[in-house]
Length: 228
Image (cartoon, rainbow, N blue to C red; front, top):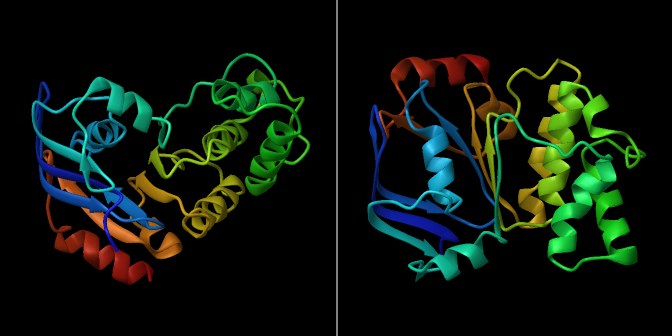
């Protein structure tokens, strides 16, 4: 199967490291688990994949076609959604938070209501439409942020530490939501410090260290096997 999104010879300097990705291919309907120590460049890589940061060198391709212009990046951002580690919700209802992106895409009326209800059901928050976003718990906020991304039906969903700090009750619900996304045709990339997520979600492991994709250290591999 041809890659959906690929990076070739990417270079993006930061203050304390340089992101250097020789080759990375993301294929349709897969989950990728991106691990690595703090400061290794995981968030930077997600922002490059989301086309929010422009590399100083290298090429990004979408469905095999190189992306060069600002217009192309702007168009493709409708197909690629990034959910940040600390998601921001508008100080309005849950429904209005989910409806915002749909209105920009001219999805309104009954279709809008159906898609919002389906997304909230998927994340286990049926009936939350009228809840105020600023009254939600931390776990509920993350699930609303995920629903807000899912309702747009992106082809690529990028998640930066989506389960960090979730309580034991919220974590399995959240991960069950993530596990359903490839069957819906969404390619998912999850940056995480939780090595055990590989066992729970499956998918393809990526390990980043000092801005480069490298084989996972032996200690990390041992931990995954011990938890299997």
